[in-house]
Length: 373
Picture 1 (cartoon, rainbow, N blue to C red):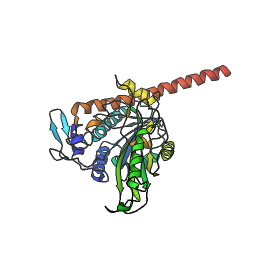
Picture 2: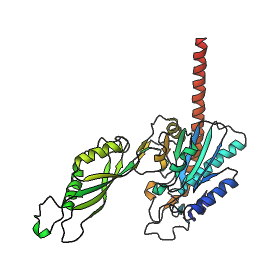
Picture 3: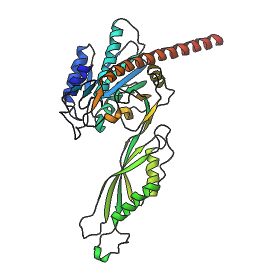
Picture 4: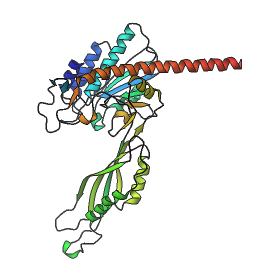
């Protein structure tokens, strides 16, 4: 796994540049005897001995561009003691590497004649960092899906909820005039109107706190207004980045904000909705049996889990989210072993649990039918 991860880190794969890494991973999987499908820079393959249930393992091949402050070349993997440094080592090529290891271990057991009792789909996808042409473009081809593991660095803590993203564009209106002829308290200055609205966000009711994610929160990320230093601005535009929770829909939150602010509000993006999986779902229970001492949590960051609406999903993987998108990103080598072992155990627990459920349902049905006869 260390050699495979180092090989992947050495391949530049910034979002929309994943062609070379997709080529390399595809060749590795085919050499291991897997039949690989490809669309763009998205790869997937299936192994199993029964049609259902179908469990998806997904992680992403792309990285963000390197941040400032790297002490070496981001694409030259560097091993220092028990750490492997390199862009993407933590987010999320460590997850890719350990998912591949877990799936190949399952394949070896199947080749020996062991039973799985379902199908595992491994999908390694592109453009996750920009929510582009990745998992969302192929998920229909992977269907039906009964459960999913999304590989992101969580310290192997199962994340069963994650925030969504609502981006709003605000436009404050005013009236152009000459500053010399306009009182300073005039309501015609669009920049002042925008400033009052942004201050009003401090008193806005963001709704009840989510038990795993807390409250929604918003940040002003861009603002633009004015055409000249000697002209009162008639327009001021700003953007709100709102990190949402499952407690309220994007549509309802948007409606309430429109009533609260004087500026015109327009939806710039609302497709990345918050996600939550019930803790009682079989995939969550399988994770809890497989990984001891963990409690389901909520993730403030987004992932391809957003494209799995309706599919019970858990975000989990080796590494730590705090290392993602940072200079000198790294993963602990022992985290690789723990991650691969955890994925393998989760797969076994999920299918064994599904088999037990099917047997119980069959016995219950047989007993009911026998009673009716």
